[in-house]
Length: 106
Image 1 (cartoon, rainbow, N blue to C red):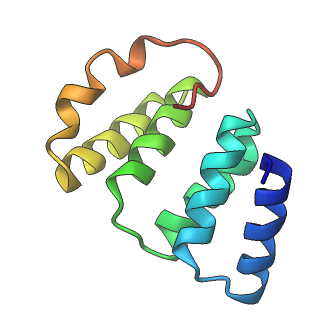
Image 2: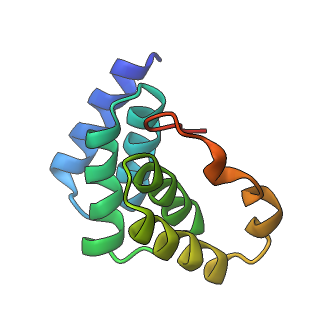
C-alpha cells in the first residue's frame, strides 16, 4: 500500500471513529514523511490536545516540527514532556535540534 492509500485508509478510519489514536498517529507519521508538515501538525495537536494521548513519540515529533517552524518554546515543552514520558529518549535526542530544515521528520 502506498502513502496516498494509507492516508485514505486512515482518514476513513478517523471519519468513522474520530477518537482512534492509532489512526491519527499513523496518518501524522505518513504526512510528515510526505513533507506535509502543517497537516501532520493538525493530527499531532488532535492527539495531544483533544485525545490526551501520553505517547512520547508524538510529543517528540511535534517538538521537532515546532522547532523547525521556529516555535522554540513549544518545541522545548514538547521535548520535556517526551522525556518525562520516556527518559530513555535522552540519548536519541542528542543533537536533534541542530537541524534547520523545515519539518525534518524521521
